[in-house]
Amino acid sequence: MEFRTIDVKKDKETIISFRKDSYRVSFGSDEGFGDEDDYVKRIEERVQSFPDGLVLVEDNGKPIGQIELQIIPYEGNDIGYVNLFYLTPENRGKGLGQHLLAYAESFFNRHQVKAYHLRVSPTNPFAVKFYEKCGLRVLEEETSKYVVWRMVKDLSSSNIYLKLLEMKDAEAILDIKRRNRDFFQPFEPIRDETHFTLEGQENEIANGMQGAQNDQSYSFGIFLKENDELIGRIALTGIARGFFQNAFVGYYIDQTHNGKGYATAAVSLCVEIAFSELKLHRVEASVMPRNLPSIRVLEKAGFRHEGLAKTYLKINGTWEDHKRFAITAEQ
Image (cartoon, rainbow, N blue to C red; front, side, top):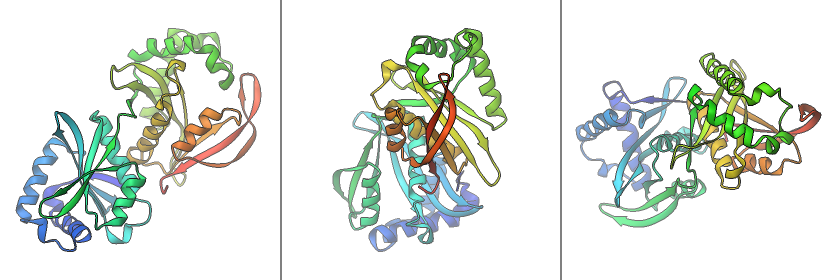
C-alpha cells in the first residue's frame, strides 16, 4: 500500500468517482456532492497547502482509496480535520482502514495538533463502529443538508514526536545514558566505558545516520512536543527488504518519564513510520519474560506474542530467554 499526493490533472476522474461513491455510501446518493469543477478546485487549493494531506492510496500502482486531510481553526486552536477516508468497495473489511488512519495520525502528529475531527453519517454503522474502535468519540450531532456526527480523537495523550537523531542530540542522549545507567543495565548488554562518553554517542549517531542512508536502520529521538526535550530513543534495525520487508524495534525512555504512556506512543508512531513511510510489512520485538512493563507496551501497541526464543540475547552478562512479539501491516 502506497500513499501518493494527488495530481489533480492526472487523477481528476478518479477523485471525483471516489468522492461521489463516499456520498452514496454515507447518504444513499451522491446528490449532495455538488459541482465537480468546484470540488476539483478545492482539491487543487488544498494540495498547495497540504501536499501530504491530499493523497491517493495505491496498491501496486492501482488507486484503491483516497485521504483528504487539513489543519483548520476550531474554538481558538488548530485541529486536524479529516475530509475523507475512502476505500473502494472490494477493499473494505480487510483491515486496510487502519493504515489510512495511521497515515492520518502521523500527518497530524507532524503538524503537532492535539486533536482531530471528522464527520460521519449515523446511517453508516460500519464507519461509526470502526472510528469508535480506533478511539474516536461522538462530540456532537450537526444538521445541515444531512444529519452527521462530529467525532473527535484527542492526540494530547501522545505528547511526543519522533525525529531522526542528529549529531546535535549527542549530549542529550549521553545525559540520559549516564543518569539511567543503573536503571537500564538489567535490560541491556554490558557496554564498554567509551559508550558513556560524548565521542561514543557521536559515533552511535553517526552509525545511525549512515544506517538510514543505506536503508538498514533508522534511529529516532523521542521528543516532548511541549518543549522539544529529548527523553529517549527508538530504532528500527536489521531491516530486510525483498520478500521479507522486516525490521526489529527497540527503545528506551528516561526513567523520570516512565509511566506516562510515552513508550506506547513512541512504539505506535514508529510502527506507523515503518508501515506508512518505509513500506515494511512486519516489525518484530524481543523482550525478557520478566520485563512486564515492556510486554504491556508492546501489547497496547498491537503486537502479538509469537513464541519464546531460548537463550536468545546476552543481556547484562547472561544469555537470556526472550519472548518474541510482532505486528504486521494487515493488522
